[in-house]
Image 1 (cartoon, rainbow, N blue to C red):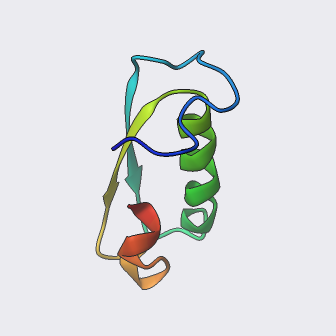
Image 2: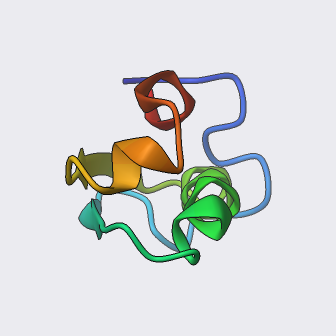
Image 3: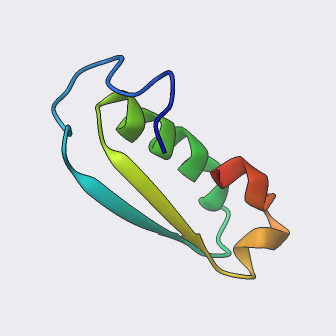
Length: 63
């Protein structure tokens, strides 16, 4: 899904697809920042969230 921030920092991850699995740990709150940074470096990122992670993060935050 293209976004306004795609490649805004660099293109080092251009043409790379990354899948991130989000679990129910407290680290799930930081995954949004990680995904944003990967997109800024040109990556196409897909997130897969466990039901436990959805108790910590709203699914819309990973879209």
